[in-house]
Amino acid sequence: MKIHKVGLRFAGVSSLVLLASSFANAADPSTVKKDMTMSDMDHSSMDMSNMDHGSMDMSGMDMSDMDHSGMDMSGDMSDMDHSGMDMSGDMSDMDHSGMDMSGDMSDMDHSGMDMSGDMSGMDHSGMDMSGMDHGSMDMSGGMQGGKAPADARSPDYSNGVPYGRFGKPVMMDSLPLWGVSVETLGYQFENDQIDFEFDTWYGTDSNRVTLRSEGSAQTNDDKEIDSLTSLAYWKPLGIFWNGEAGIAYNTENDKSAIMAGIVGTAPYFVETDARAYLYTDGQVQLDLGTAYEWRLDQRWVVRPELELTAFSKDDTDNGITKGFNEFEAEVRLAYETFSRQLAPYVGFSYKSALGDARDLRRQEDEDVDSNSLTAGVMFWF
Image (cartoon, rainbow, N blue to C red; front, side, top):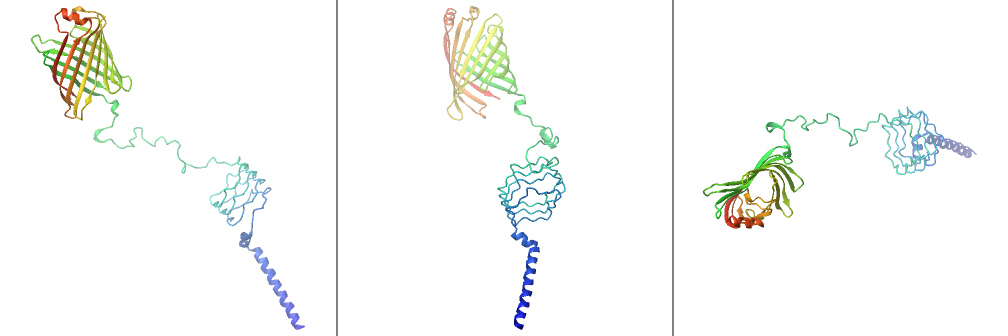
């Protein structure tokens, strides 16, 4: 009997120890954290107006099936603190579609909130956040774009750095320049004369003033000089064509004229020019010219040239008839030297009277056709 009493007393003590251990485990927060699941929690009537989440740890909780659809957060949550809240757990299936957050959340602090968990499946489609105030939110540090401050850069883009001894740079198209181009300066052995044609200009790529002259000077006894000189305004009309307009003077008939013309490059790099002269007596002269440079190598160039002259009416005193009066052709072989700015040449020229001008010259005992060897130089600078 004594043995049975001892056994009952020992069993009673053991039961008390087990019961105390169960209460201790129930009171341990860490045990609750490990075993607690929030997958079926309902927050539909939850009041969060004065909640403190400062030290709330949700890193080990399973919140995949939490339903916040009826959760009302419309109250005053201005003093809620989420700074220490850990939400690194699984929140992939949380539903916030019906969550009302229209209350005052202006002072909510989420600075230390850890949301590193999986929230890929969270649904915020019906979440009402109309009461949230983002007016003082500063996102200037991480966003691109926007408007630079007024004093971010100096107007001339120098940022206060001087230009040095060369001064402020300028664009080439706005800087006035000048140039001289001599297309012909050669001697005709058969006709015993010097032919010349030159063009000078001053201005920019958009506007220029040009002075042009062409003609011949006899080297025999009379030393006669025949030339047609024009002063014109030059302006581009397109990529390949330029326009000219100005005044001109012809020493052969001693008359002045108004000049207009188009010069440029035709397809296949054919140099083309067409100029019309309206003289004071109503006579109109039309000069057409074309030339092409056929390069044999980097220095040797073959240059054929063609010219036509036509008049609007007869002028027998100056040997002019209505229509085309003269045709001239020349072929040159040139060698470019000194950076291709100087090119001596030799060539052959042919000149012929056309139409009624042939008969008029025969009547005056003048040659209607002539040809000659030529030698000269072309240059520009």
